[in-house]
Image (cartoon, rainbow, N blue to C red; front, side):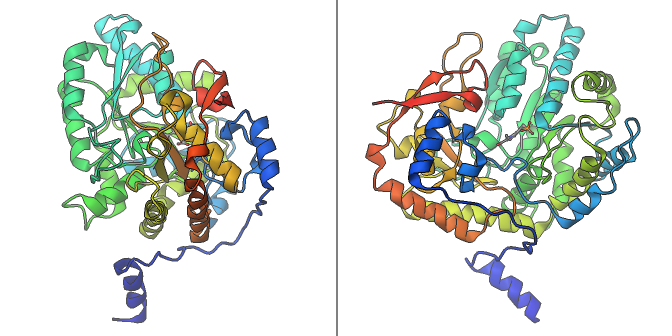
Length: 483
Ligand code: F0G
C-alpha cells in the first residue's frame, strides 16, 4: 500500500473525522456579541431568530440555502456570463449540464426553488382541469412531505395537502436507512379515495427536508413512479439535495455500493416527469433554481411554464438569473456530486449528532444538511401550541449566539380551509450546516452550548404569538414569552 492509500484508509476505516477536503482561501470574519446585546437583539427581533440581523449572529445555522462556500471553478465560471436578454449562451450551457447529469430535455432557469414552484404548480393543475373538466377546489396533492413553500404554492392554488411519510419517519428513537420514503399504502389509498383525476401531481422530496434531511431509497422512488404511471399522475422531484440523496443510496442501499454519484443521480431522476430544484443547496450557488421536464410528453405544460416565466421570473433563457449566475450553476451541479465532499459533509452532520446524543440531547438520526434536535422531548413542559422548537432556538441564541430555526408546529402552519393548526408529529430544532463553511471546532462549540442548555432546560419558557402572519408564518411571526 502506498502512502496515499494508507492516508485515505486512515480516514475512511476509522472513526477519525476526515480533515476538510478543501483549502480555505477566502474568509469572512464573524463577531460574538455579549449576552446582554444578544438579549436586546432577540427582543427587537420579536423572539424570532429569523428576524435577527446577521451582524448579531456568531454561528449561523439557520439554513444551508445559498449560505455555503462556492468553489474556485464556480467563481471563475461567473466571468464567462453571456448577459444577452434572449438566447444567452450561458443558458445553453446550463441546459446542456442538466441534460448531461439528469437526462432532462426541457429546462427553465428560475431565481430559486419557489420560482420554479410558482410556474409548475398552477400549470399542472390547469392540465388536470382541462383533461377532466374539473373545479380547482377539489384538487389534492400528495408528497412524502411537502417543503413549506411547495405546500404554500399548492394551497394558494386551492389544493388540499396530503403528506405520506413512513410510520417511523418522525420517531427519533428509531433508526432506519430511508426515513424519507413515501408510505406507498397512504399514496395508493389517497389516490383511490379522492380519485386520480383530482390529483394534479405527486411530489417526491429528496432528501426529505421536513422529516430531518432523510433520504428516499431508489426502490421507493421506483415504486412511487410505477404507481403514478398506473394512474397517469405526473411525478415532480423536489430535488434541492439530490446529491446527498444519491450519496445515502450509495452508502445504504444494496446493489448501489459500487455505483458513482453520477450514475445513481441519473437513475433517481428517471423516476420522475419533471423536477423543481432550489439550486441554493447541493448545487452550491447563492441564488438559482431550475424547472426541467424529462421528455417532450409534457411539452405543452413546459411551454405554458415558459410563458408564465416571462411574467413572473424573466425571459425563459435567463429566468431571473444573470448570465454569470447560470454559468456558476452549470459548474455547481457537477461540484455537488464530488464523492469526497459528500463524504465529509455527511460525516460532519454525523459528528454533530453523535456529540449531541452523547450528552443526552435527543436527536433525529443523522441525515444530510442538518442535525435535528427533538425539542418536544427535550422540553416536555412546553406544549406544542407554545412552540418548544422556537423556545429552544431562542435559548441557543441567548446562550451561544448560534442561530437555528424551528421545524415543527410553527412551520407546518394551519389548514388553509378550516384555519386549524395542522397537527405536527414532532417539534424539531434544525441545526443547519452550510456547505464547507464551518469546521469541526464549530461543531464542538455547538455541542458545548447544548451542555449549558441541558443544565437549565426546566427554566426555558414557551412562546405565544404577538403577530401571526396568514401564511408561511415562521418568516415574519413575532412572539412573547409565556409566563
Ligand atoms: N424544496 C425544498 C426541499 C427546500 O428545502 C426548499 C428550501 C425549497 C424547495 C424552496 O427553495 O428557498 O430556493 O425557494 N429550503 C430552504 C431551507 C429555505 O432552509 O431548507 P428556495
